[in-house]
Length: 416
Image 1 (cartoon, rainbow, N blue to C red):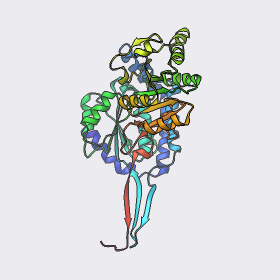
Image 2: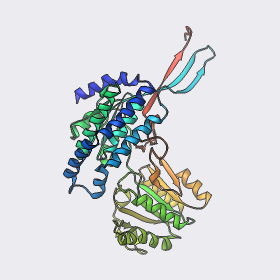
Image 3: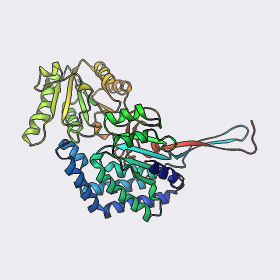
Image 4: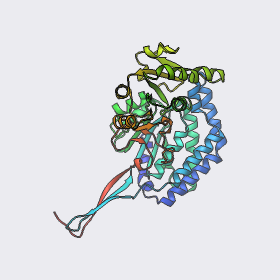
């Protein structure tokens, strides 16, 4: 680990000095290298899948699995990052004092960015591409479930860098997937300029509580859908269905449904029909409904436990509660949300105004699915993660969020 940290730090100046053209050429070579080495990457991924099968859920296996299409999408994502404006060297602010001293605020690379993540191989290429475009070196520490896949991907990316004449040490993979390596990154002061954990609550909390290097909390998403009494129920059902079932293993999937008491007798049977009965009839995995006492009196499901409204299920499970109006919905979200994404379904401007003003999350939706909280969907290119904190970055973290800034002051012999 010490050797890796030293290599990464030694590459920092070279990567920071790359021109936009050099970075884009390197990204293009990285994307092509992924495609050229597809067979080796898929073979490594099969090893990971074999080891994981029987130990993780089918939903998590899907997160781990690669295919030719997913590798093509990874390469496409890298090229999309290359096409974005360069975030380094931007003049963010400027003013000249009365004595002629020019003070400029300019965006600069972060330096060395370490990313600790779990079982999604595409994060490997996304993180490497974003860090390079932002002029930074990256250190990637993936989970043991995806280690063979990550190593094959990084090998391909580093070969792409070499072909483009860029130091391969711009991208570094931690080969020890134990907790010791994660702990070492958390305390790598003087080597790591920013630590980003991407994963479950356990990983994120461990980094936030133990890191002595700067750390951004990302990812955990207890996302709420609130169906207000004026909502178009057909639209509400469509949004809920997408937010819960399109990809339940990701952080922007809905985990909690709040329904106004006035429409609960009409809307809840529609929810049960669409998420449970219809999915069963279509041969799809039905959603398990965890119900509060009022909901249980209207539809069938599993009684909600004490932790069900504080759980990121990442599976086909949905907690449902009936609320007495918008203020109770806002209070519930304030108590149970992780600050990721929340949505209201409504047809009134007053409910929209109240909800968007009072709900303190990184992304607040009106009549739309929470599944849009994503760097690509927001036009940022692929993302480094979803920040659920407020300092430095909030929401999807694209290129701008991976830079810092410094002041450049130009005078003519000015003294104070």
